[in-house]
Length: 257
Image (cartoon, rainbow, N blue to C red; front, side, top):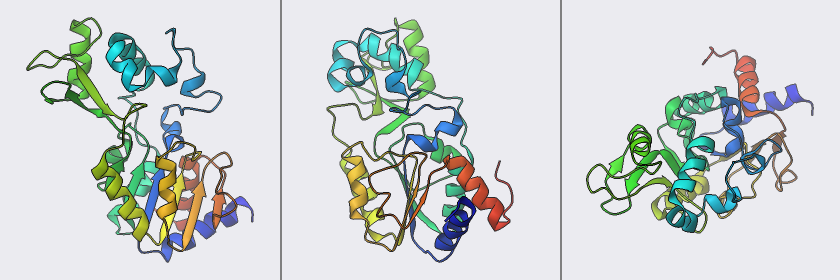
């Protein structure tokens, strides 16, 4: 099956589905200028300027023992506040608006699904857009956190009690939010179609959530091979934004950009 036939097949699957769920990873946001983690140009292979490996920097223990170094890395490598949703984000939002997409389950922390207009989004690893005081739990916006860091030696502090503010992202050695996990699993378990987009399916426990899918159509859109290529009904090894743009063109739909 060539690429154009795969796009046609994707269109047919979505057309006859009633409860589509999208499961997205870093690859869906790469076309928006946000690097993934494990590719040649990914976050883990970039020079950070900090004498610690990225996996250690974005851990629970490192945050509390080296808070300034954590934020130096975090602000420079993990926060992309000017990034905009690409065609893949926008297409999923339209599918939800049209009643086809039940929910989006994402491993990403960039908030681009919501910026695109998606409403039912389960952010397994949290979001850079939410931040809370480690003492009083007061909520802080990303803008407030960045401004506070500028005047507090690189470490954002609570505007109420003055204690350190922590981003609402799941670091290594931290558990996933139980309510988010429950919502994600429930959505996947009732879906008739699961579209996996832009993920190598190597990060657990999140990657294991796809095992709760009992529906009919399993679709994978990812530039590289994954462990489920042989079991998926349809595999499209392509940039996510391009694939959904080509799907839109095939369907004769109006532009989203």
